[in-house]
Structures are given as structure tokens and as C-alpha cells.
Figure 1 (tube, rainbow, N blue to C red):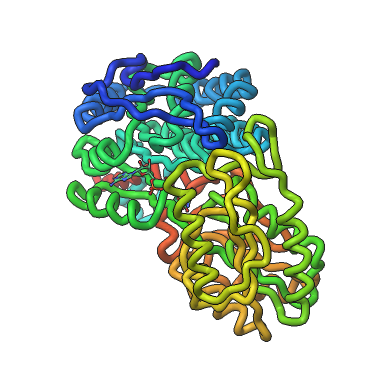
Figure 2: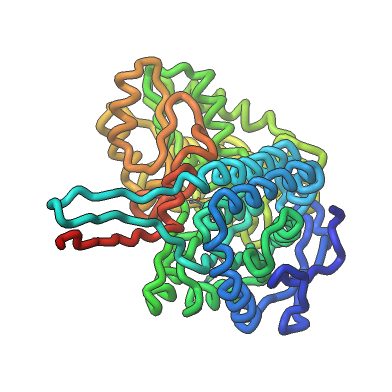
Length: 477
Ligand code: NAD
């Protein structure tokens, strides 16, 4: 699975030319080297992909669930058979260290395995009523699922949405992010090799135009969007035109509360994992360490040491941290660092670009952060930790919840009762206790507040791809 010089769209089971000659060059963010050209897909290409997905929908939904399960399970096998190549490709296209790319690929395979196991267990209910009424429900696919994916976990997030959509009996049109389009195109080929019928999985590359065309398309029956809040809002607005249901997985500004009795080694370790993994380009990152004043100075000293221990480098060489994925994000993160300094926070470490070419930013820690500062309120999406002191529990909860997001949160304490009390009071879709990035493919994931609508992962995700039909029968003679 070498990286091709030039890619085409994947529609109706084959690689096809786009409606335009315009292309986007995807680059290695560590070196700036061009990796490949992919078509800058248009609304016309989306029309074509949606129409292929519609044509394939009836036959896919009418397959026996056990047969869909077998096919979806084979996608996982194909991914595992090509795991090394996929991880290397993802590491180059996205920038992440190879070990992390392997983890993403394994997770992608797990999504197909997990949902394959659920395919023949999607059941309705019977509803007890008076004797002469018999009512039961069946769960039906929507039809065509449109899926718009960001650039931080390209393959993994594609699999996260595609696997439950397919298992539920939907066909799909995928629109990967313009800076990380390669793994989705290879995945579509692996789906074909696994026996997925033509038209069931389609990929249109490009930027805003195909994204907007997909989210406003009359032929799309359900939408899954993962990305930023402003784009999520735009997707929801366009979906409103045809009353298309949306699942939105948006950003976060996640609090990690460190209580005075926390094991500081553990807290420092996990919060560093939480903010420096994938160079901080993680929606569920540990963005804000909210630390009790009695351990604040020690926490800052230790997390600075840990931040400084990261080597920066080219993803495939498996450094401690890779570059940011693209020029725009690089500028955004450096701007936020300037904003933090001008707001009066103390820059403890990092803050500058790396020595090499490429979009490197050193792991950065700000202390003396006021919860009202922009660096404490807005999602930076980079390796920038803000450390905020608190003096009592209620203040910690107030700071934790005083943002527009509610994706994840965490609490560190040796006292499980105190930890669970804080976990209960943090407004977020996932809470980690004495760890970060807890849970797995089996665990429902999604946001409260502006972090989103609906849940991905776990059995709950199937709800986003199924609609309930109730059948009522009059048994009177
Ligand atoms: P983005 O919103 O800029 O783009 C996401 C996708 O939307 C891309 O494929 C893009 O091409 C497409 N797009 C752009 N304009 C569009 C439009 N008008 N209509 C339809 N589609 C359009 O996000 P990003 O910068 O790629 O990703 C970073 C964001 O994603 C962060 O905010 C992060 O928190 C969020 N994210 C959330 C989760 C989650 O599960 N909650 C996971 C990963 C990333």
C-alpha cells in the first residue's frame, strides 16, 4: 500500500476521475514534502457519490444481518492485514508518531469488529397494550449516511462512523479533511476487497465545497459530522433545509481537576498524556489542569519537566511528539501562545516553534492562568496546557464548568468518594478518574453543551444510524 502520486475519487466501487482537474496537495507536516495530489471534489462529485449510495441502499439494507456482519468483519481483517502500511501512511499524512498511528489503526479495526458483532443483535421491542392491540417496533436504517471527518484521527474517526452506519444497513458517502485524505481512500479500497458491494462506501475528497454539498444534499438521510463548533453549526444549518438528522462531535476545553490528595506522579503522567498526545490535536485533550493551591507549585514543576522530556520529530521515526498537521493550525497555536503571554499568564516552558522545518511547536505550559483568559476558554487544539489554581472544591467545579464545551473531564484523587462526587458535578460526556483517555471503542462518546449532539462509539452509536418504526395491529375479530 504505497502512497500514490495522484489519487482519484472512490465512487460506486471504483476509483474515478473527479468532475474537475483541480487538485489538493497533501504534504508531510514534518518536512513540507508533497505526498500526493487528491481531487478537489465538487458538488457535482457529491451528487454522483450520493446517487451511487442511493442505488446501493436497497440491496445493502435487505441483506441478512449476519451477512452484513461477515462483510464488515472482513473490513477489520483487511485493516489488520495492512496495519503497518496504514499506520506509516497515516503517520506521514497526519504527522503523528508511528506508535500513535498504530494505535489508531488498531482502533479502526476494532470498530469494524465490534459493530460486526452487533449486526445480528439489532432488535425491536413489543409494547404491552390492551388485549386486542399488538404493537411492536422494528429498527430501520436511514438510507444514505453522509460523514464529514476532521484531520486529527483521519482513519480512526472514519471507521468510528462508518462501521455502525454499515452494520445498521446504511450506505455511506465520506468526505475526509483536505489535509489528511489518504487513509479514507485506501480504506474504501479495503472495503471493496472485503466484499462490500459497489456504491455502499464512497469517498469524495476536497474541502468546504464537497462538505457543504454533502450536508445540504436532499439525497442524504443522516449526517455525522466531526470537527469544530463553527463548521458544526454550518452543517446543522444546512441539514435543517431537508430536516436531515445530525450527529455532531465537536470541540472541547476539557478540565482535569487535581484534588489535594491526588497521587501527583499519576496526575502529572496522565495530564501530560492527555495534552501532548497527537501534539494536543485531540478533542478530548486535557486542556486545563485545575490544581489545588497546596500542590500547585509542585504540579507545575513536574509537568514542566515532563513537557521538556518530549523529543520532537518526524512521525514515522516515532518521536515523543510530532508536528501540528497543517499551516493554519500551526499559526493558530502560535497565536494562542502570544495571546496567553499578552493576557499575563506565565509561560513556564515551550511557546516556540521547533528547530526543524515543518509545523512543530514545543510542548507548552502556562501557569498563573485566570479562568476568564482566552487561553482558558477557547479550544487551542495544540500542545498547550493551561494550569489554573483553586482553593476549594466548589471553586474547582465552577471553573471546570465555566466554558461553552462539555466533551470530557477528569479528576485525580486517592479518595474514590470525593473523586466520584467531582465526576458527578462536571458537565461532560466522558469523565476519567485517575487516568486520561479512558474507555475504548465500546464506550459511548460525545459532548454536552456546545461539544455536540448524539453519541459515537459503543452500542449507543447505533441509535444515530437507525430509526424506529412502530407497528400496531388490531386483533379484534
Ligand atoms: P473543521 O470543522 O475545520 O473541519 C471538519 C471537516 O468539515 C473537514 O472535513 C472540512 O473539510 C469540513 N468542512 C469545512 N467546511 C465545511 C462546511 N461549510 N460544510 C461541511 N463541511 C465542511 O475541523 P478540523 O479543523 O478539521 O478539526 C478540528 C476540530 O474537530 C476541533 O474543534 C476538534 O475538537 C474537533 N474534533 C472533535 C472530535 C469529537 O469526537 N468530538 C473528534 C476530533 C476532532
